[in-house]
Image (tube, protein in one colour):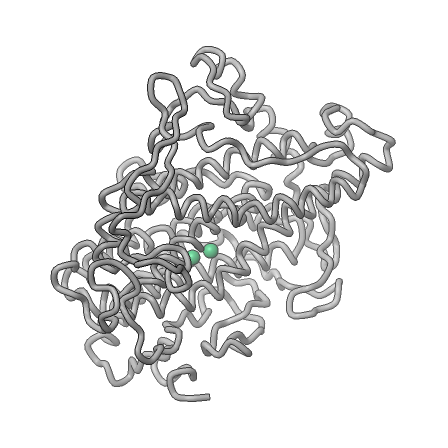
Length: 483
Ligand SMILES: [Fe+2]
Ligand SMILES: [Fe+2]
């Protein structure tokens, strides 16, 4: 392994960016660290700071062996700063500087735009930790608890990744922004997190799984487009973050899949043929498929909102500047400047959905969102395969892009999940058919009883097919030591 791959543990902060010879940044980060730890202890997993958790820690960026598994107390986790290796001869992949060498320093003219993108990305990372801080108490198994905490420590590392960029490249502004990232709070009235979905509650484990499937996938798409930045340090840090992100979506996909699996098994045992017979299914102590669809509707649409307006000059400017590319920009075969290209975007006007061709440059958000929806479909298909395998006639679907939106052209539009335009009155009257109601929430909450015996699982969820790090079924993923 070369020097850029190995991690230096000779300073307080594991890193492969030569921190020990960069006194200024090292000092700034060491100064930020105590406030960060206070934030983690106050806003991180509630009640488990003393527990020993079987976690992976990033110790290098070598694709073949970047993680090391061991028991760790979370406050002692080695949150490190790891950048994917520099690609020799890398160019600015899009916009008016297309083909010029990638920037190793912040281009002055784009400084504030770049800072804003880094801060918005950074803000989502601690927000999700805050949203999930009480879930440990109702964990359906030690396996699931461990996965929750793994996601949490890695989101916190992603905060570190963004704070490093701010401290290293943005001077005093960067220090101020780094401090503020520790001050905003998910769901707060005075100082909320920056984006809507990150101020919503994550009240139960099905929400957590839906969140990691749908909202972490938005994170993936944003990281993918920042990995295509002409500002090379940002590209490199995002590329490594994507390695960790894959596990978060795995937790979401398999979590929802195991929930579906258990529901189907119970329905079969009880001789129930109709998955929409909600009362009978709930009596079995599992989550009925129509409620799973409602949860999907909620989390998918909140996540669509994270992509911003379909037509956006900000997105056009960021692309043009070469600081944020499209999904897999370097694999797309076109001029990478979008001088004459157009892109179809639907619009809601006068109560109708119309599709328009707009300049592709202004439709960057829309294109990324389309890529996201295609990507999100894969897991839905695999969930449906579980339902089908058990012989039930029921299909989960992604709702229409106009359903339940709070950002963009469809904001507040009365559109059904099937894409039918109805009256606002009818929409309001039928809302609980499509989105989780108070009653649905109460039912799910009634199932959220902790199950903390090694190898055991709560009755509403099936065990995983394989353990983490190939551990056997009865492995004790968390040693509790409750505070
Ligand atoms: Fe993240
Ligand atoms: Fe994530």
